[in-house]
Length: 316
Ligand code: CP
Image (cartoon, rainbow, N blue to C red; front, top):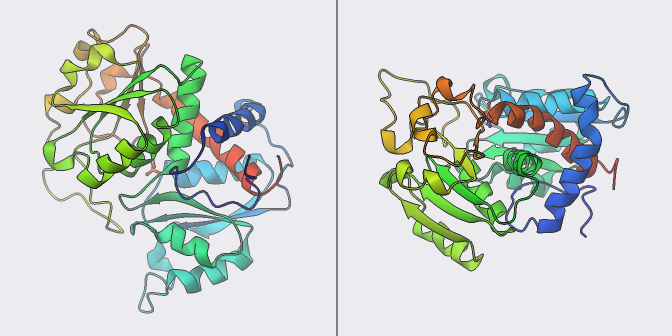
């Protein structure tokens, strides 16, 4: 198996099946630290640098919480406008990461440009973790999601995933690569203007992913073991900020999960949503046996603990 020590986590394309299980194993080992709200000294000599060029609640804070749980330190920025990359100088990624690599031992980057974390990794002498790049990928979120599904279902092989929402989303790309490593059947449901691109479908075909596309969630809900959601009322992920202007509209029923819809679902089907949500997942579903997004949120810290421990060489 390829070593994780010193490795960048940029994409799930090429992330191999046994590597998922390795990451899950480390996550299982470290989970009690987070569950018991305690700390360890595993990374006590290490510092995490967060470089967030786009807003985030979960991804940045989960990485920070993970580092703190493992006894490490955290520095960084959550608003690039307060750095030289976001003012008059528009400092390049190359020059910025040549600075950041001296401030810590691992860089977690979110950026509005697809490929920006990969560009950072070209210049950084420390590992770079992609925390979401434009419409590109969101590997740490999907590792969290696969870990959650594996925990809840006890397996990944043999499951049917229903993916609902905007297929341009970075999570949907990473999830598609992840599904291809397992015996998973996928059904995609999205508005036509947010559907899988022809180029991406060619990639999925090359990966032998078994999938279909349907128009309305009600036509596929009965088949699903896992319902994986993203909004269709979305900001533009290629912008540093996309403020809400006026009425953004409502989610059509085709892409919305309600209690009424879930009566047609398998009794043991589970719903994941990386959040934030709009009206595609109604709060009335939160109290049902199907909801797993709060477990997913907790696992977001555990998964980042595992990834930090692995790429910093604290566990092999
Ligand atoms: N799921 C997710 O990436 O959330 P944030 O944008 O809050 O980090």
